[in-house]
Length: 309
Image 1 (tube, rainbow, N blue to C red):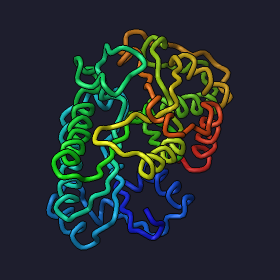
Image 2: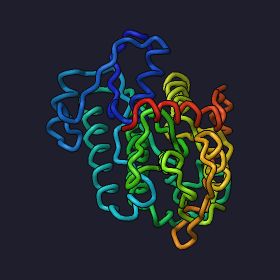
Image 3: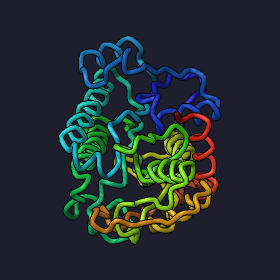
Image 4: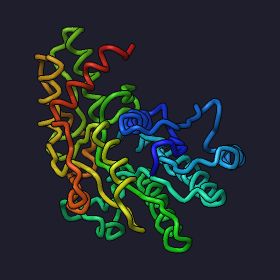
């Protein structure tokens, strides 16, 4: 797509959306549009329809979503299911009705069955029950990727769905009530460090595995898919390497400089035991990540120190 084509990034204030904007600008895309929640409520169908009818972007990156860690997902399954389905429906349906044929939908590795074989191949979707602790969010993402697939098959659109692993990085959410694992551990260890606490509590056994992708790598991969991938179905994007939560916590501990003890509360849930994506299809297109886990964590912690109050 030409660099002067109009691109709408939904969810531009979030970690994912803001990273996509940075990456688009680095790639030379100049005609970018976005709206804040106060300007455009994506859960309001009439507002979305009016906006897309008026703006008629050439392409859309659908990065807007209600997201959160294991605690938030367990306590608010209705919100994670319904709000995400509504946002997705409004944007995807209105895109088609306004002849916007290029769209990229951001999903999640949560879509896969909780006891699936590893690494997670695209064909494992819908082959077993989902992880109960984030089932609502996962179901919403499955609805979104299937909607894109069905539009492509029925109407010939180019609605791409990419499934990244756990994300972290610049502009992450560090609220302990809703944060994902990396942001939560960074904040906990930072506060323990400055308060001279002797211990940081971590949910679960620490033995569960997670694949972790720096958000700028995710954005670069997403735009690479936008420019290079063709296909009706979704595709995994990621680094293809996972770590135990204990290994992750120890790496964050080193980056933050917290010298106390890590206490794993085994009375709390682990969530899905392992989630590592098979990214062979995407790697075959020629994409590779740029950041190691330690490099990404160092950039994230630096941003946290400069921006979080």
